[in-house]
Length: 207
Image (cartoon, rainbow, N blue to C red; front, side, top):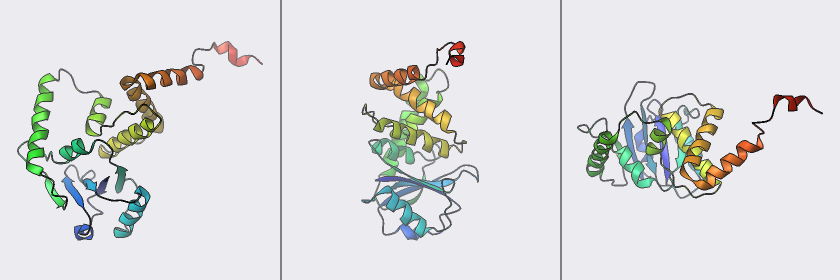
């Protein structure tokens, strides 16, 4: 199962997906940010899916026009997020639902949860909270967590049309994982110490 996002200007014919198991909604916004996103059932590699989608829509030109990512353990939360619509009174515009997703109940669930979160919210959410609420990951305490966290942050930046800065994203990955796991907290500290951050400037002039 994979996440898929295509900018609205490049999805010229929805019927090209009629032979696939797919759930896709129209994410509204400004003309520059409006896009279609959802999940697609695919039993081959992500690279093979990218090639297939690009062959179906030859005008696609990289990350600005589309993105595809693995859907890990956050399947249920992500489906609920897709069903949010524009507001509690406005359900999502469904483009394709060949997976028979129950949209109404998930739409209600999303906004009920949203209302509960607002009651407890005393200050605006920090960036990392917003990122991983939208694109949660399952921490496994191994090196694969770095890839998953990076993928979540990257997808959030794409969704929000933020400029991609590898240094900033790398810092966010390490900060988030250190907050979530003692295993990663120790690894990040070891990484920091290995960079000799606290050496005297005089040391750099010694042979």
